[in-house]
Amino acid sequence: MALEKEIWQTDIVGNLYKGNDFLTRSTNVDQYVLAGKVVHIPNAGAGSGVVRNRSSLPATVTKRTDTDIVYALDEYTSNPITIPNIDTIQLSYDKRASVIGEDMASIRELVADWMLRNWAPTAAAQFLRTTGAAVLSASPGATGNRKGLTKEDLKKARLAMNKQNIPQEGRVALIPSDMMDFLLSDADLLKRDKSLELDVKGGVIAKLYGFELMERSATLVYTNAATPVVKDPGQATAATDNQAAILWHPSIVERALGTVDMFERLGDPTYYGDIYSFLVMAGGRIRRGDGKGIFAIIEDAAA
Image (tube, rainbow, N blue to C red; front, side, top):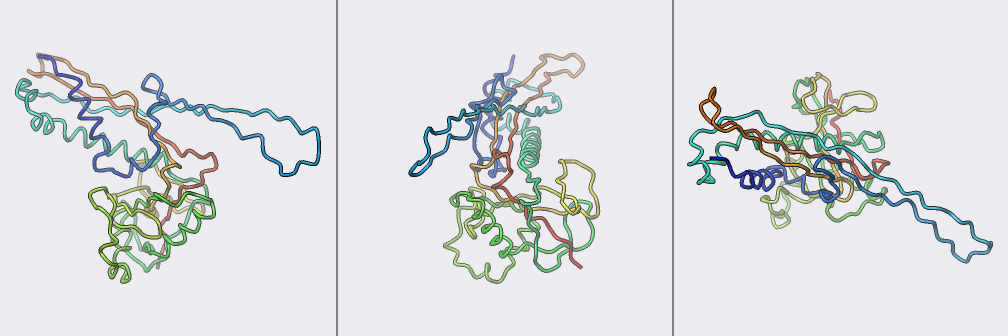
């Protein structure tokens, strides 16, 4: 019998951000997705301006120039999988989940990896460097020591955001596990009143200098160039690569989910069963053209 697509699609959509709660700390623009594949956002131009106690007449007439934001969503597809005994799986959510669990986890991770890449700051003005004591590099393929992430580094990021007039409520700091481990070993943080800790279930470990601290096994990796260059997920590693903590405000970055589909071939004679695969269209971007409002605290080399 045919599989109920709606059930599987609900599983995918409902759990897409599971385990990557940081993705929900962004502006949702699903309503601007066209045909499930392209984001189209009408973008109002600058206002005409305001003058106090105008002394010169006639006033200059201006025309507002509006622009459109358009970008394509990325396509994520799972490898086809054979599901035997379809009647039993159809009736039991647990069994269905166990069959598609690995595929969905892989899609979730890849969507999250590339969403971070889409949000990655690239302007030198949005880069800070770690300043802590030397710690062995944990970036894949990297060698040597790097300076650890400290609370003072987050304090500097706070000031940098304030100078860019970024809203203070809701700021997020997504930190790779190795950098988080060094940060939380700070003696002052170890003495903090536990009542200040937030709900770990929501993905937030603590709040510091106005940032909700969130942890992920890996975030972004940058080269060690004078002006660091972010690497794509899966790109070849280098001994000089550096991890980065990413800090932003939800109003600065956006996410979009488009088509979610399932494909099936019933009664395949070569696999003696039914074959299924899944497709997800997703994407995102930094919302400001100048790149302000999102920072990367990149590891610095240490002796």
